[in-house]
Amino acid sequence: MQMIDVDSSMLSSVGYDSATQTLRAVFNSGKTYDYFKVSQEVYDELIASESKGRYMRDEIIDMYSYQQVKRKSKY
Image (cartoon, rainbow, N blue to C red; front, side):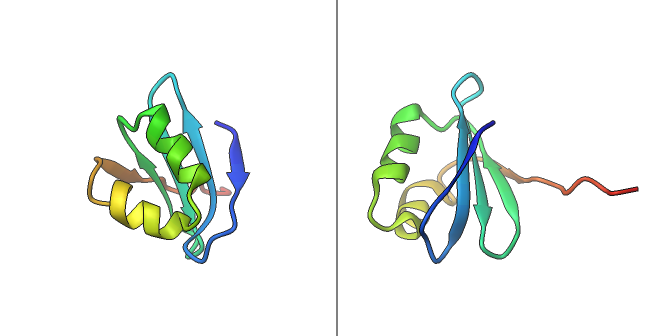
């Protein structure tokens, strides 16, 4: 999944896999979450939104099932 950096006080980068309809969001806290069954339209609206944090809060967080992405161990 290709990630793109975004200008946001909440997010550092986002990516989208259209085959699985998975939105990946990397938050400025360092935590990464995958949101499932997100349409291409919703992803496009997120990218186009003036406030990506507000869009995440209003349209994605708590609206889609999600899972935190665990970091791979270096060992």
